[in-house]
Image (tube, rainbow, N blue to C red):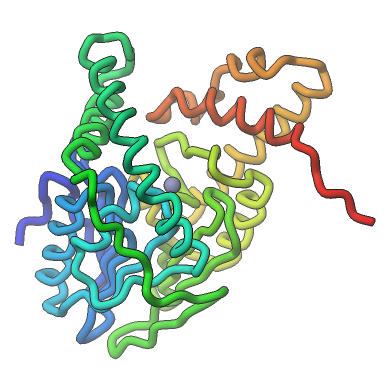
Length: 313
Ligand SMILES: [Zn+2]
């Protein structure tokens, strides 16, 4: 088969183990993983649209020669689950919290995203939304993908849920699904392939793209990334960006813990939310795509530190 569709390109990580890396201008937006378990296939994340999900399910079956038995959702965000039904898996697996969030927020977010995508695409095309060339391609694919998604899309929810860990003992290899809680989102799931020393991290890891911290808990995210590092993986598949060495988890941790530390100092020095939000990103993050997320993240973390905390008696 060709190792590329309009939505993603396939990168082989090992025998029977693949990453589907979202193309810049396709309707995939997030990365996915494909695991040949021996007689059945596991797909990790379903991408932004049914179009990309369909292509992903077909690619998985052709690469492994086996039907997709399990689809894993790393978290409930639309760019990871809207392909759920289209992948054609026998079962969809995640935490009960992810299942609830897809059911509760999925249809609401699809409606609001559709309105926003139409508005932002018009701003992009009129030049009002000024971004770099690469960013422009990613945004166009993202907004067009949302607009190409049927408004009444069936958001298939996970039918198998687990609390902290689920191990799939395939004939060919073992895959371990884990959650350490919620950091990027209220509940984040990752997949570990212990023998291959590979992890699929969803949006717990972003490489070359600013992560979005705004639906999560930055302090929990730092703690979770520490636990991820203890898994000792050599290679990590991020939700956005290329397959990267395990050390990229440390860089993501620095992004979040650095922002927390700077926001604490800014509050101590009496900087306003807007003043802190205007501070530019430092290297290497100043070159990352989705550059405007940096200011959004800064303001979010500033506000987040000022939230009332539950007091312990
Ligand atoms: Zn996300």
